[in-house]
Image 1 (tube, helix red, strand yellow):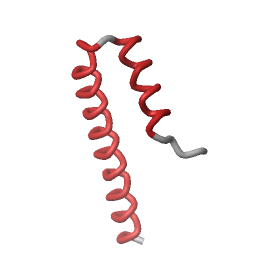
Image 2 (image 1 turned 60 degrees about the vertical axis):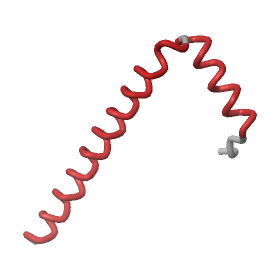
Image 3 (image 1 turned 180 degrees about the vertical axis):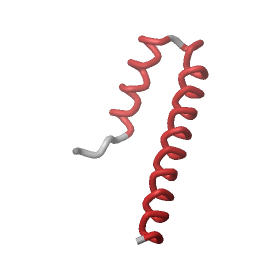
Length: 57
């Protein structure tokens, strides 16, 4: 996958602003943050389960 530079990121941001509008950006950012947090919790839970299984074996 090619690296994204500043011009590419600006174009993506512009498209997001056009599609969702400026007013929705904080709401979308919050939802994205919550999603990432939940994903991290779920993956850390899986790691802990694996460690517990290894200890039992």
